[in-house]
Image 1 (cartoon, rainbow, N blue to C red):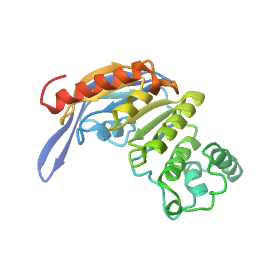
Image 2: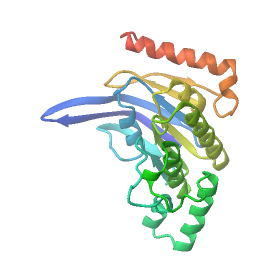
Image 3: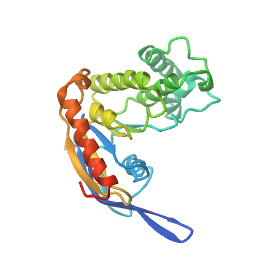
Image 4: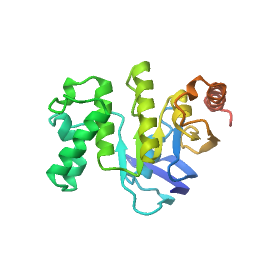
Length: 247
């Protein structure tokens, strides 16, 4: 569904050009899940923004088959503080000029699915971090996306809330058959959610390794020996990069 071929990206600041991504190539199949992990500041978010068509490569190509609906969840949730929970969730549909009755129906369904019943008239500042994250997820799901791009969506949450929302994401994307691309700093999160794990080097980022992770997608994967060994494998690959060694 997603094909990236020899894509490179650079930024220019005060007359100086800095390479961010170098010769990136990979594919993501329809209904599959892909996690992107690498050292801090290596360009993971820039790569996600290329996929989401927020940025454009200097060279190479990015192709998404067909014209799928895409939802994006940002690190800071991206909620509008002056809009209520219901208004935030329905924002994408409002911008698409969907009729109000349909928006109300979709919002009501998502409030129930995200266990946010009774919070429709609250504002984001009145919610916990986990609840804000569920609102952001609901807003992305409101447009019925075929692809979901997620940039460190759970990074600011405590461990138990994070695991609970990982399970929720896993359940939703499986039921709705959504293709997902996740950027994360967490090795455990990458292994739990990504059937394909792309490991990036330090900037300018290139692909060190693409790890197949077929066990991802099972709610009890965290308790398996395979999960444990995959986490160790990724940690060793990233450790080699931090030590300046090629993995």
